[in-house]
Image 1 (cartoon, rainbow, N blue to C red):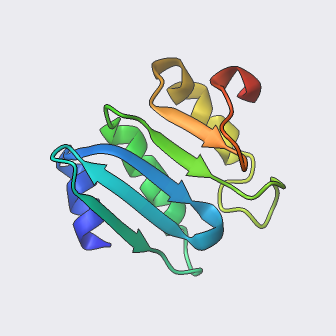
Image 2 (tube, one colour; image 1 turned 60 degrees about the vertical axis):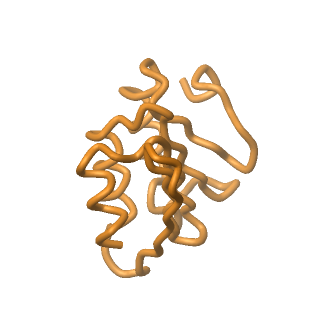
Amino acid sequence: MSTVLNQIRSGNVWTATLIDAERRIEITTMDKKRFHSYWSEVGDQGLKLDNELGKAMPPGGYTVVVPKRWGWFSLWGAAGYQGCTSGCNTGAFRAVQDEPRTPHDLH
């Protein structure tokens, strides 16, 4: 996880995907290297990763994949919509609910 966070914080991430159900993050760096890591069920590390990506604004954007049902069991729940509100306009954030969705679908 520290390698992934260092890549994000250094601005070296081209694109990223957070997969809520698997508690996994996948990144592709500017030099096309790929990394992945997992986070534990305890704490809010998924949300922290989401916040770090929001700050970093990867040029290729980032995606959050959530379960088909939004709700209390998802780390993001309604926060997925809130995170998209500021990022959708820049194209930096896309929420995915089992299949790609457009920013328009989220508003």
